[in-house]
Image 1: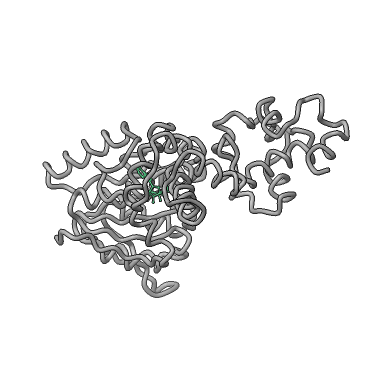
Image 2: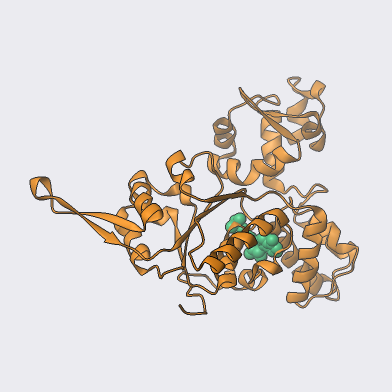
Length: 344
Ligand code: ADP
């Protein structure tokens, strides 16, 4: 087995800096301590038994570290990794090269695994369970199935939605880890460390400000840090001070809770068009002219957690805090007042 992971993926130059900020080993990851501790035990036990690590499924909102964990695990184990995306695996034949190329003990990472069609999913079952694939050759009465043995490998899946993964697939993962939002403290540590990697100086009081406005995800913290770095270089002396951070965030219309324009537009749409809800997510998405999946995966998780909106059996509904955040009260709704206050 080679020591250096083989990474099969295409990255654009824009991703280069992103890659530089991504932790290379699990020890470098900040937060998610319980997940880390469980993975460490599983990795240690697998290496002591000289067996491949059991299959692992990560779920949680985007930007919380699913891919980072998936990439760090093989590095920690010193095994190769192949990377695939559920969206591009349209038929079993797309899956076959990954399976046959998998070396003993190596990792196959499938991002957005919920996007695989059923046929691909079913093709994976024997591969996951018995390291075998069943190939059908020929058609009709001449059709026959041959079994092909695979090397024992570890499948790591990532999804923003465990809810839509079928039970048979879900149950074939020995470990299922849910990644939750980060605390401001953890994000501040990430911001400080990554400011170092980006070679920009940051004042101690500025880091929690950036962290607190990051909607609790490391990806957003990194994006905001890079913007503030650019702002500091262009509009100040290159150092990130508290006022520089605040001005840079204000210029991007990021508010005190860290919400951006799209987040506020979501709250405002429910308030203005749907009288505060309850309203189905499709209707909101339609009005905002964005795909419902974007709302569900990227916009809603943080707003739900921040209790600005709640899910009811009849749909999404703004909470008093959600209304207040966009400068409204319950009494403003359905009064004609809403429209003029928000969009007047
Ligand atoms: P996901 O796959 O869940 O969408 P990623 O693993 O791509 O999220 O994480 C997004 C970015 O956030 C990464 O590039 C990395 O820089 C950063 N990141 C994620 N988790 C951590 C962590 N635990 N510690 C430090 N940085 C992290």
